[in-house]
Image 1 (tube, rainbow, N blue to C red):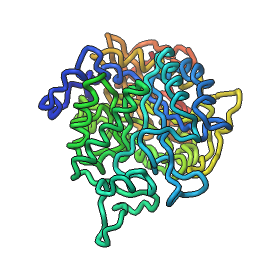
Image 2: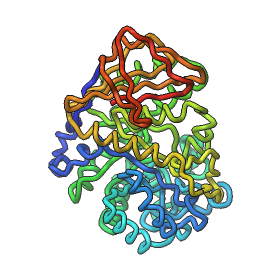
Image 3: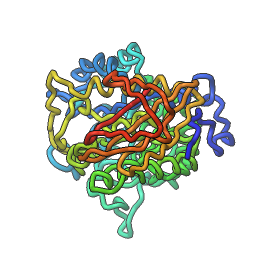
Image 4: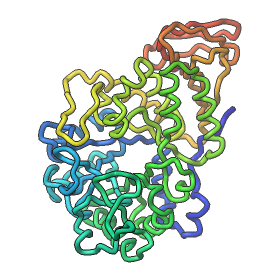
Length: 436
């Protein structure tokens, strides 16, 4: 089974919308194919929890190979209905202001300018489905919201700190898109990660992208698995992959991951899923990746990065951060000087860039007669990389009959490994080979 990891073409519906600007020579889709995203939790990143304090970490992230910085919502947080002491970043009280918790408008403007000098792209979290309970619109424009039978604001999905917006109201649509445009005009951001995008009509996103991409080609990432949203967005969440990883950690065989993932890519060969083992939701609500995946974490991380799609790294993974961060309270990441995963992630990003900068990259599963080992090859520009990942806490043997007979260099250890087709090879528990 194989699929071509080609540069995505404009999805079907977008051509009807005349996406001439976003499909220009600077099309971010071409850039995204070999890129990565780093999610910034400003509140928990430093003791200060500010944009200015985060800036000190940006050279380190640049050195690690990060290319896109995604900032969790920076807008002020509703006081009414607030959860915990500080509330949820996703309960906004004003779409065109910055929370004093993080700094001010000038702080963010300078941060984006600095990020651009370091060649980062900057995207912000956009929460379009709902607002906090004391958002300014609840007073100035109550017609922007849906109402229950008692003509009261409410949320359809049971979140008790927010109110849902009404996208049948054209004035709401116009106001929301104007708010998004503000961040492009004022701060020169490079795109949006759109929270729970499938709860907002696709037609809104279609018109928003058409309007906002007319100024500059933006990056659009959607928190959804609804493939229809690929008609607008560059990347959708790959929850299927994450849940498969968690199944493996609970004892299911790993080969099912490869089979499902490659089948998914066969059905969507020009799409870019967002691959991850953690993010703010998973970490705070389900536990750290080490609680959920245990010793499988390094192999799962390799699979996310050296694969079709866009890998996502969450704040602190380079340490690694092994604790679940509080969501509604101050709970600073416990930084230290070791950064044990820094070099690991950096080398994977470097290899990813080398491989997926090529439009002819082909990923192919390998039959090694062991369902506990993820085995696949990536061929690009007449080069082949063999990736073997032992997903278990026990030693595993694999049959090399379907691996090309060659002498390979292991990417991390620099050991020479000669593959002979009639031999069986042993991988130690949770061991990984990346053979060039």
